[in-house]
Image 1 (cartoon, rainbow, N blue to C red):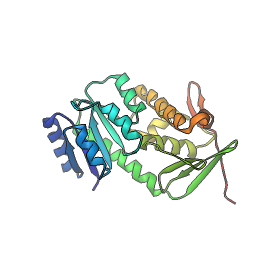
Image 2 (cartoon, rainbow, N blue to C red):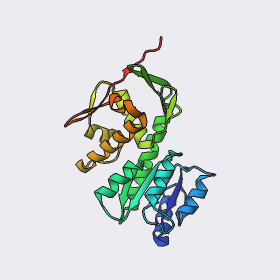
Image 3 (cartoon, rainbow, N blue to C red):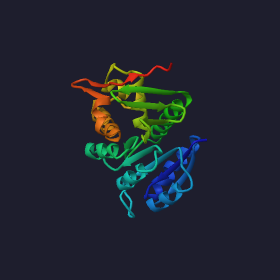
Length: 233
C-alpha cells in the first residue's frame, strides 16, 4: 500500500481529500502545517507528498526548495489559482505535478497512481548504462534510480529522472516537447510545453557547465541527448 503525506491548512478539505484517497487504497497521513511535515520527513519518507500552497507557518514553495536540497520524494502541489507563473515556479523548484482548487479527487487519485506507476516502472529496469561526451561520462543506474556525472551523483526529482531517462534511451534522436509530455507526464495541453523546458533547465543546471552540451535544444521542436552510448567490452 502506497503511503501519502497530505498537507493542507483547510481542515475540511484535508479531511475530504484524505478520506477519498484512503478509499482509493492509499495509506494517508494528514498534516495541518509545514512544521509537522518537516518533522515527519525526518523519520519517514512517503511515496508521495501532496502539498497545498497556503500555510500560516511558512511558504510551501520555499519548503519545496529546501526539501529538494536533500530529498527526492515526489511532490504534487495544490494551488489556489490557475496561474501559469505559479505553476511554472512550482516546477522550477522541483514539484512533479501541479493541480488547482477546486479539483476532482478522482483526477488527483489517478495522477498519483500514474506517478507511482512510473516511479515503480523505472525501478524495474536493471542495469547501469553509460554515455560519453568529450572527456565526461554520464551514467544511469536504473535499478537504483540514480544518475552520475563522472563519480558525482546528481540528485533528480521523479519528473527529471523520467525526462532524462527518456532522452538517454533515445540518444541522438530529436524528441519533441509533445513526445516528452506524452511519455513522461499526464498532460496533453500545449500550455505545458514550458513545463518541459523548465525540467530541462533544471537538469542542465544540475549537470553544471556542460549541461547544454549533454542536452541540445533543437529550436522550434524539442531536445536531443548528445551523449554516445558506451558499449561494455
